[in-house]
Length: 520
Image (cartoon, rainbow, N blue to C red):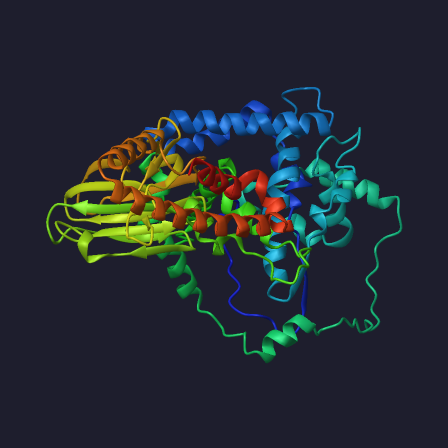
């Protein structure tokens, strides 16, 4: 989308294979793009005039992109003169033609149409465009036209372009040295090609050839462009006049009205991909890779680490989000990653609705809209885990990143528990859209040192004051030891598995549990 000003969506699948030969890439063979480097940069920087508030930044960006491309083609084409008119021609050959026409060929292929565009073949570039006695790079085309189809010499081209008469005369001189081209009058032989395709036959048999109205496809693209998610993620990085320029063009232009929307949609997707590439691989992904290993051949089935409650508890993040003010306040979730649990508990719905999100993925993206003016509260917690007596265990999750509309909120990685969460507040207005990103990993300890000391001091006081309660405490400790021994036995069994050995270095769930046992 970023390279196509006009998208020609295929509305149906061709039942019979179709072959077409096109002149795509011809502008990189003839002299259409022969222009000095400085003039080419100036010409393209002129497009920034459409965006007054962003003009300076866009001009700098355009210059940087073109100059970077020049450095690449300069080496490949052995260009010595910086003002050589071969620069833009080489850029079009290496970038624009291959991207633009190459994507079109792929798009046609999936509709069962094979497009042949010989002019984007790198071998074609070896053809001489001129010679010492005629330095016009349109000589090749003049030669082809005068020999095979003189009619094209009379056609008026876009922008008032034409081939110089002197070049045409020189092309005629070259042709005079060779036998003239004579069109065969006899009947042409039949040209047969394979007109069936197994993939197409299968799709047709399934009934997967329902014609789509182009207006419906274009409306679908427009709906995506108009979505709050696309608007917000794009405007986080760029001046919103760019988005509104595309929006205004889509609503007023008659000729390909979505041509500027495609670029916005493509750039918004690139932003997501770049953000993904900067993140660490989530812990759960490494665990999944370990689970997929099939070399564990003991009698018991391969162990899924996520089925172990202790491991599950350590990797689960809980994020509470609420728009606080009055009963009508709410949030509308526009986008959220897969593999998450979202609940709307009744106890979290006073003075505004709240949502509780659980995820084991290691990272989470969410986009939502605020309904009603209020105060947005976001809590970073760990899972609510209790023992058999209903007492909550202070399990910690280490949050490494929290971005709010692109701004990093956490100054450092820190562990938070259910009872000791991180709380973030932000004033919001009705209709505000928020994009939030979270990253976390298991904490290296389940209990804080302060809590451990607290428990120890309390136990000593009870032992000194009441021998009966001391006996009760001893029995509880024995029961706990039995529970931990069972866990340790499961861990030892898990330790022998290939799945554990592959995932150990990154996840260390067993080491965490064993350390807890030792502390007891």
